[in-house]
Image 1: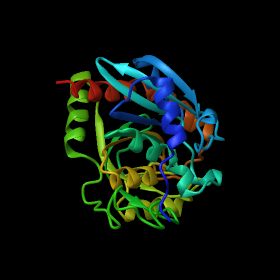
Image 2 (image 1 turned 180 degrees about the vertical axis):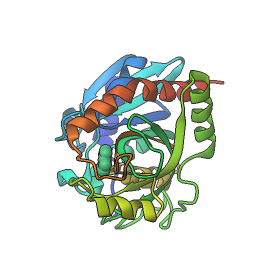
Image 3 (image 1 turned 120 degrees about the vertical axis):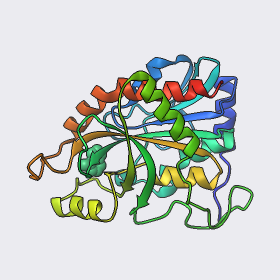
Image 4 (image 1 turned 135 degrees about the vertical axis):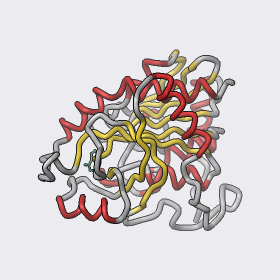
Length: 275
Ligand code: HPA
């Protein structure tokens, strides 16, 4: 069985927001600050939307916002749910499926991630050029509705080149560095052991995290253009190669510190839409 359109949720969004948006943004842990950059026109708690699961993690607000950046309407998922919370892949991607059904064509996904490649520093922003999916399950497992997307979607260009170029240009204009690299997603919630971080590096990851990949797979299946941005909130190894102790508090603190720069990249990318 494929997953049905969530008609009740679509009606609610239309009623409460009164207009649709073609650009969607998913804000990860401690990265909710982008909402301050836009003129907020409406807000709906996830708990009000039929079929949308609620995030159980601190740092994830759990609401849909409709706003304007310049003349562009943007719908924001402030907070996401994760596979490690016990949700199914269907739940984890319910928000993105809803946005796709609602007409969103361009999706900007953000996350907090651990840096594993040489030269990564806490506070860096990384443009995701590609990903490695090590979640135990693919969100497209099960029946496929050909009207939504192909059974075997291509993933050779998961992260849109044009949007990446736009993001780089924004960062150049704003005067800060934007790294680019491969994001490896797996389930968590335990942070990686030093051996796992090393493995991630060996198999080609620049950063690792516990989200994003399922959402991007669904977004690509639905034909959305995707831009992915990671905030490097911690690094696998210290300058002498020693293992680092990780905590959610440190991740949130580092995310909050970088949130302003992240928000300006997103805003700049959306504004360039209008040109
Ligand atoms: N590992 C996994 N997920 C993360 C990390 C990490 O080091 N940092 C932020 N999210």
